[in-house]
Length: 228
Length: 228
Ligand SMILES: [Mg+2]
Ligand SMILES: [Mg+2]
Ligand SMILES: [Mg+2]
Image (tube, rainbow over all chains, first blue to last red; front, side):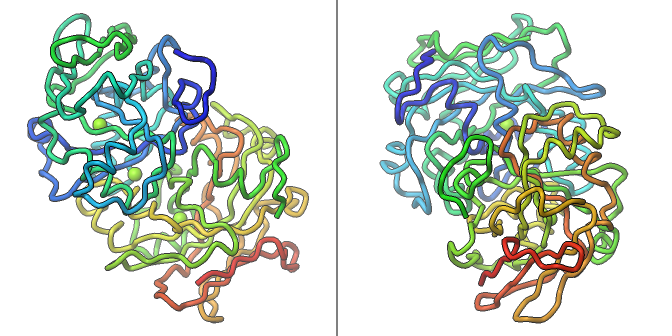
């Protein structure tokens, strides 16, 4: 991890200063089924605060009292430029706007989220506690030639829980960035979480989550997350 | 508006760089009744992205196609320091953590929000479009000796729509900052919107909103918002 802030190059320090973190919901069909949700006709998204980002080695995910804490492993895009009103067909524009990648775990207070859903209340509390976004080191763009062909995985206490390819995304990155950017201008340094595949589930204090990704069968060391 | 960035002093440039904007929902009893909502047992809150901030003179609020656009005038707190796990009884801690104030209009895509509520989906799209947070100039802390004794008002085409005192807040500022800071650490420069009094309603393109606030019956010029 580079501690030197270079103009236009993401660093862990710049991640914590992201002006927003936008997360896509329900972007993998099997994950929608496992939570008994409806398949969306268009991407929907929500925000996590930058204060929820947990850099590598910065300590455990803190479970708030009474919370049913779930993991969701996701590929994160780190934006390299401002994006506004991107067309969904503009694949080159979408990929050019990405500066680098990271792996992230969208930690979720599932019981609080379910109660919010029932009451029609916002999700931001259930998604936004401090430490609810463990991230990996930054992954150079060149290390992921095709973001729709990446194997994500997550284990809990060395048991496999999530392992799927990003090729299973319902809405692909150009469509996602288009939809977001027609609502909220994306700024340089903003982070986009692209949704989680099936296999989400609970963790309790003391559990060890390990997550990572493989490109062409090869693990990227900088993408590893190990967090209690 | 100062264009010089001074350390620890909010400026319009620093507002746009807020690491988060946290908004309290349903914090005035008569506003809850007018939207047929349930009175919350505790403060709830949601996020707006910094990209939605519309500085003074930066142009009109842009209504997305098909959107039923509502105004909500609110007193905004600009945080002067990091706040984490504040106790609700710590009035001094809460007020000391405020650096300055602003007036804000929490623009809301009411039909999108109602649909999200019905479907149990996040509010972030309905609340987060570009230009959905017109703000005033920054108000020096000394200009508001008691943030619970401020008259907020909003007119549309010179017709009175909202006019109430912040003394009507259901949850006062120490409780609000306590609840938020137990979920999300507040950082210096973060913005907290404290909820809207009764009188919310629709605006259409061409309408002129004017909002402001009075302290001891005296209008603060820096708190004025005039926006189409
Ligand atoms: Mg929300
Ligand atoms: Mg997720
Ligand atoms: Mg509001």
